[in-house]
Length: 163
Image 1 (cartoon, one colour):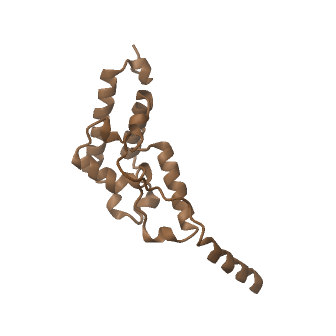
Image 2: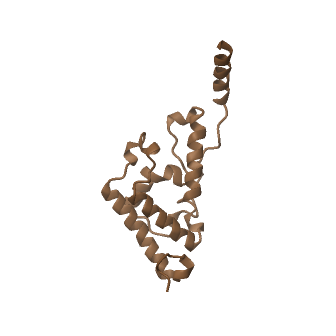
Image 3: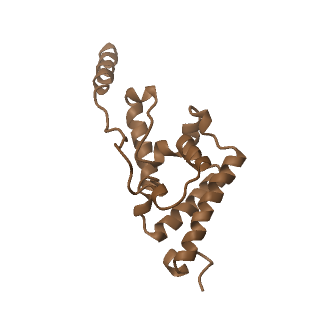
């Protein structure tokens, strides 16, 4: 039993030196959502506090991210979040994908699916108030309306809104 504990301890020490690449891009993001759509300061603040750690190319890492296996777990969440929606790559999405991602954003925020509970347990300031949810969803809906005006309904694949 002593050998098992010693082996586990040695492994725990060794993995402290193995870290994934950090999600931190240098400079301006040319495909950021703000390059294509207006992002009011109130929305920018909500995104910065509640969304961008997992849905942008720049994560602000907490102190405990230096510990393994916590860093691997955080990296996995960030990668999953960016796969679902990356505000720093939004302008590169097709209009259909933009429309769909905004639909998902609105649904997730209204149904309290985002931000994740595992994130808000530690980042209490990331919890969205009713007013913040309305601000965020109204902004996303405004962009959806812009897309609806610019593109034909079939190109956006909007359920229930086809001619």
